[in-house]
Image 1 (tube, protein in one colour):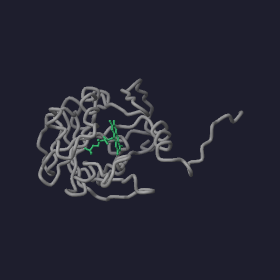
Image 2 (cartoon, protein in one colour):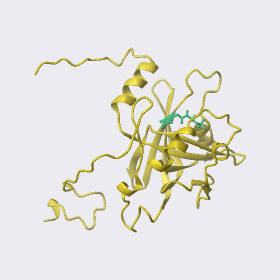
Image 3 (cartoon, protein in one colour):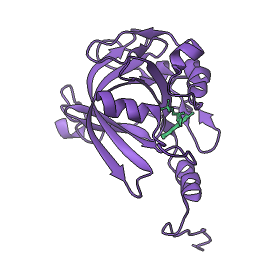
Image 4 (cartoon, helix red, strand yellow):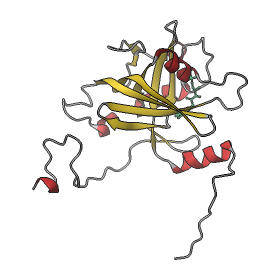
Amino acid sequence: MPDDFVTIDAKNLDTEAAYRLIVGCVVPRPVAWITTVNPDGLVNVAPFSSYNYVATTPPMLAMNIAKRAGAPGDAIKDTARNIKATGEFVVNVATEATMELMHRSGQNFPPEVSEAEALGIPLLPSRHVKPPRIALSPVQMECRLDQVVVLGSGINTLYIGEVVAFHLSPEIFDGRRVDSVKMRPIARLGGPFYAALGEIFERPMLQRPPGGEGWTGPESK
Ligand SMILES: Cc1cc2nc3c(=O)[nH]c(=O)nc-3n(C[C@H](O)[C@H](O)[C@H](O)COP(=O)(O)O)c2cc1C
């Protein structure tokens, strides 16, 4: 086969070019719509798509929060500052229904302005942590900070949190499984684009999932 691929060595890429490439290549990304509070209790809301689950036992999530590009002095984002100060955050799943509000909450509001108040985002209290849950989100995960890992040149920091409680709307949870189709999650692509779920494909599970009781795949035969 002819190799007509464009090959880019990453070593000398500047931040902007590297960002453009990586957010175009790593798609689709789920969106963590994160609530935090500052030490005075002011609620901050912002979306983060450099995000995934990273462990099951206990369940853990991680997201990368970058420093603000071009910002003078202390360029740390409010979400990162609040998580460092309080050790707590809530990840709310962003859906088609919440896309507009979620997107608008990604504007650079000053630290003393609560996106929840400014945008009228309805909140519910959490059980174990101070940051509230976003009532419009069908899944809200209360998290306690486990580790902070500064990555590469220091522009990006990975925040790893342990999920201490899942809150699941009965509309998407039957007591055992989350119905991700009913959830209608939204995904972030490169540039200004989002995507909804497209066609769903089903294939047999090939290996026993962690703690897979009820497993009926090939290994159980
Ligand atoms: C869909 C979406 C995904 C985003 N993902 C990230 C991300 O993964 N990391 C990041 O640092 N900023 C990300 N941002 C930008 C932040 O949301 C933005 O900088 C926001 O102002 C941070 O708010 P804060 O200062 O209240 O924490 C994203 C924005 C949007 C709209």
